[in-house]
Length: 118
Ligand code: 5GP
Ligand code: ZN
Image (cartoon, protein in one colour):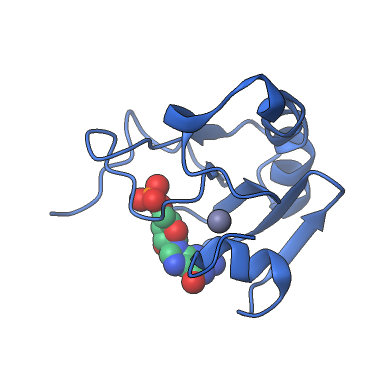
């Protein structure tokens, strides 16, 4: 647990979230500001700031984040596919400094890119 980390606090239950999945490595919940009908965040339970900070020790959690994405997308209402986005660091426009994979989808194609309005 990294103190003052928003997503570590969500994993710990200190800040509420709409949890949809949890195992020993990862935690998944609905994004508070969904950009598409399905917008899930999948995060490692241990604190990892971004892929800029990842090491071999993080590989099990990184693999699990991708391995559970399809199941979570289908169950959340995106059976026909989905997109995974991981923003990293300042250039990657990462806002929350605890690694998270956005899993976005719905009943319509998500479009060529997902752009945040400036
Ligand atoms: P980033 O820009 O870092 O890739 O994405 C951060 C994401 O976290 C955004 O999509 C934002 O809506 C989401 N987010 C920020 N704070 C919270 C929160 O307290 N709860 C939830 N569920 N999502 C959050
Ligand atoms: Zn954290």
